[in-house]
Image 1 (cartoon, helix red, strand yellow):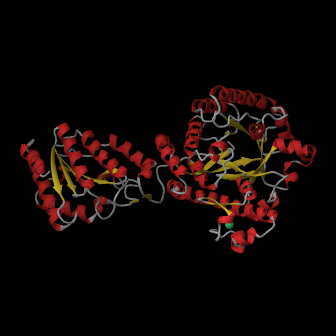
Image 2 (tube, rainbow, N blue to C red; image 1 turned 90 degrees about the horizontal axis):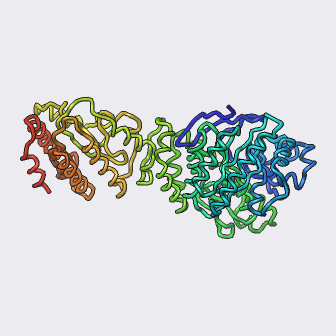
Image 3 (cartoon, rainbow, N blue to C red; image 1 turned 30 degrees about the vertical axis):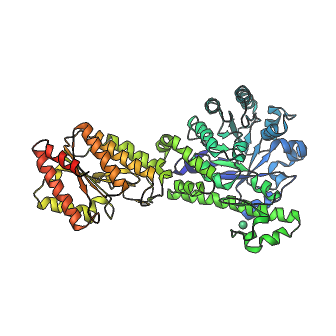
Length: 559
Ligand SMILES: [Zn+2]
């Protein structure tokens, strides 16, 4: 296989793609070059930006320089010794209507110019296309895909199968399945450019995830026309391995300055928030006073630096298992990116199923946008199937102790010691901690990654509190292993009051006694823990004798 995965986080991966010009590392950004209007030469891209690969448009190359490119080969023609991908010109069809070239003619040209990665001449679906027309673009692309593959003379070029369908997700799924069955080495998701130009990143999430669910995970996925660096992390997290971008140059021509959080017009900038070679040397005013061509080149250079820096940041985040946190950060750049992150929640099962389960570093939980993280869902699924090692009579819910792992904390040790001194059989007590973002952590599990390797902001927001409460409730209702009484240690704030109500309700539904241990003063103060221990002792002793109506009465009196 031409593609190997070295490291993963979410669906994002650091991979190695073997081409006839050597190996390139993914995620890979391929800047689009157009020899007619190119602010930074391919040679400079290679030398100054260490650019591994670029994209040129086969249709434009053929139209403007046909024989010259054939004679020199695309690498010599462009002056670029590394990997070249040729896009077929399908986007020009979308923009300018039909082009006067046949799919097989383009494929032949791509072989003749010795490209490394080639795209067939597909028919982009475009944005908001009527279903009938969209279906035509899918079928016609598939027809062209088959005939192009049949016509190929060389075997050393990697061919890309474009997935069409636009925002008709059933068509995207159908298209992806069909392309997957053909002998393409790479897949690509077609025509999201207009979706991205309109900042419809939530639509993009559905399109990419649909494509991803219908192709083999081992195959690299290219995203056409991924413009702005602030969405690269989303594309990577959803499993896009490569993307081409012309935005660095198009923006420069319009005096637009890219940042990793958005775009700023040069005339609105007084300071450059960047340290690339351009921004360290010049001020916005310097650039503004330059001749337009010179300014365009410097802006393109800065824009490209930002793009490549973002790719490096994403790769480092994959290594560290921090890709989700990078998404949360980028989601604060623009509301439409936050929409995308929320949309990703709809696909959390797929993310969970294919994300690695262990990383060296712990996770940071900020707010409810993090609830779709694979590790949280994974814990939830595990809890539904898990049972404590021994039968117990009392289920004790505690707020988080002050250190992790919880079972080694001072607080839990103190409770155990006191119960022991009270001659209570502690094996009859099942200790659980309720906490954001995991909901319920039985202390037997608290050394399982990342249940002791997380930091959560406090107090949790409303959605996160709701999640924790519903997890506690589900844990009580899920349990049938000899439990007779639930004891809840809780603080009298809004969260605690709601939690206690839900616990009591869950207990009454399945006939368990509920004993409320309301914190007086500080959660872990001596008095508070002593009172809790008394309640637990009481519950254990009573539960050994069977159900006790008195307990239920006590709990009702406490509300
Ligand atoms: Zn800069």
